[in-house]
Length: 404
Image (cartoon, rainbow, N blue to C red):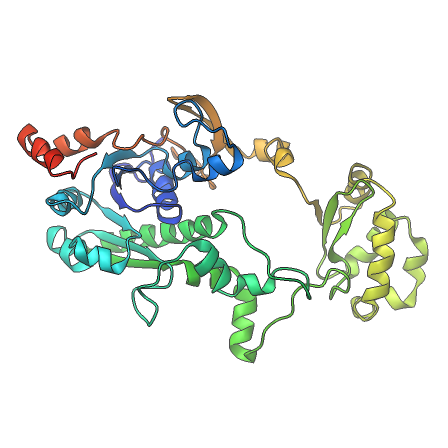
């Protein structure tokens, strides 16, 4: 099988999650990805693992989150602050197809790695820049993480939580990984455009715009009405059949039946509530919406009468659209996820470990992780020698502090 990006070379000058995870997906697709990393190491190394596993030992334990976002790459330890480092990057870019960075605009200018500068080196280069808010506008120089730009300032956070409660935070990397798919799409489209025009392309992706896109139904409506949509009220939902309910064992399930009418009678059967079928208040979606508080309260009591395991066959027998609120130990052993090859295994220096597979499949193509993430600077000399740097040049760079 052929890898879709076989023969494509990618240079990544980025850290943390969003841009590196997009480059990792390019590696999954067969691209040769070189990660330029500060000699002290990407800040994302060990961050999450130390929070979840206080006795984490980077010498013997798998740095799982970092592995996911950096697998299959070659690592070059290069201090961009050092003399001569920018020229090394330009030599890499001269032989590359894609350059990915999330460096701030001042640093890009200081290192002379701007779109205009690199176009002079490689006119066919796809230049991809990820920022929190964009390269234009009053806040173009602001630093950002997905918590701030994607989750908070995009409007998502204001909509999540109980109506009278505080806004809720997101999970680590949630916005970064959504943005990575956006970045990947833009880069691949730019490659296609280059095929048609034989010209390099500038691709820009922001965390904030990606966040707004993920809640596009709300945002597009507010663009017309200029309003703030209400938070979802679990006690008085717009539709009681589109709501979460607690079960007898303290677990939760989510009903997702937005139209409602064709599901109403089957739901009544699943809940063993024949009287509801005859109740005129609940005979239509509009009626159930009008009487949502009382119907939702009654449904809460019914769902609390059985465990999640007991409700599962009853709801499935009626072919209702619902899902358990799964906890991660269940997710990673879900037979449906297994059937769809959601997980894979990689051989790393600390041993073989399970990880997420590429989040999409292409029939007949070679798609998937190529290997573990590199150690800091693992391939520095290998990559630079491929560029034609001599031992004397490497020694000079090392003496200047550029190489790790």
